[in-house]
Amino acid sequence: MSSEILKENHHYLKACILYEVLQKKPIFDSYQNFCDTVGKDAMEYPDFEFWFYRFYDGNRDFDYDRSADPEPKTLMDMPVKLMYKIVGNLDPVERNVLRSVNRAVRDVAVSLSPVFEKMEIEFHENNFLAWKLDNDPKLYGKYKELKKFILPGFQVNHLRLITIGEVNLPDRPPVSLSPKSVDITAGYIHQMITLLSITKPGELESIRLESDFSMRMMDANGLKIFPRIFKTEQFKQAKHVDIDRFVTNYKLFLLNCRHLHSFKLRIFAHVPDKQFRVLRHIS
Image 1 (cartoon, helix red, strand yellow):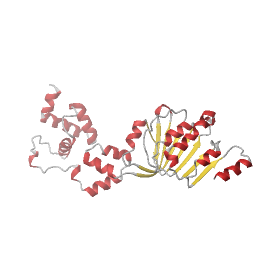
Image 2 (image 1 turned 90 degrees about the horizontal axis):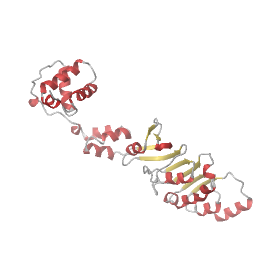
Image 3 (image 1 turned 90 degrees about the vertical axis):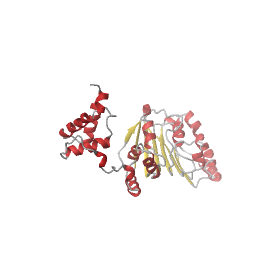
Image 4 (image 1 turned 180 degrees about the vertical axis):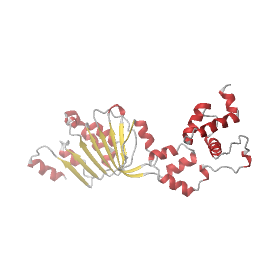
């Protein structure tokens, strides 16, 4: 007998459900096994659940007429306040799953934008990423997993971005975030510029740029392209900047920092006293 004919035989389907009940397995495992046996389109989960618990309670009447039963409640019958309370306690991953239920539930999930104090993203080789929120455990995946994780309206106050090893970053930022401050540690200056583009200008107030101490960015080409950072909208609209050790043209740096409320420049090379007097005059 073909599987399509069996799907139309309601007694056969209920016999399969009764079999699952007798196996004394959790209902979700039972439903998965039921679908593997007769097909995923044979019966919707709510119907399976009804017959499963009816058989579980000892009612074995396969011909029970459900037409007289009250219409079963659905997720959308839940009070709106209760739904908002539930969604408010979900993390971004769980909210992302909830968005796939239906449009109404998705709207609730999106409307309650999660706000976090800090987020850290590590960029590894082969487009591999690791990220964490606040003090939560790290999550791992590719760029597409990170994009799914960042829900519309996602907010974080402090963002830390780190490159690990020889990383080839995409030309376009994988995500767009609106932190108040960003802390970037990278091996090359062009990586810093790419990572800085993840943040939204205007929203970003503080920028901290730090080398990974490998000295890779200290080569002539790296130092040559560093002034490109001054041309980014993120830098132009920032209020506070902290830069670690790879600025060599101090005059150019100060000329581009006049709009800032404050800046910190850590110098690891000897600077003549005469140079300091020139810098003081510029500032």
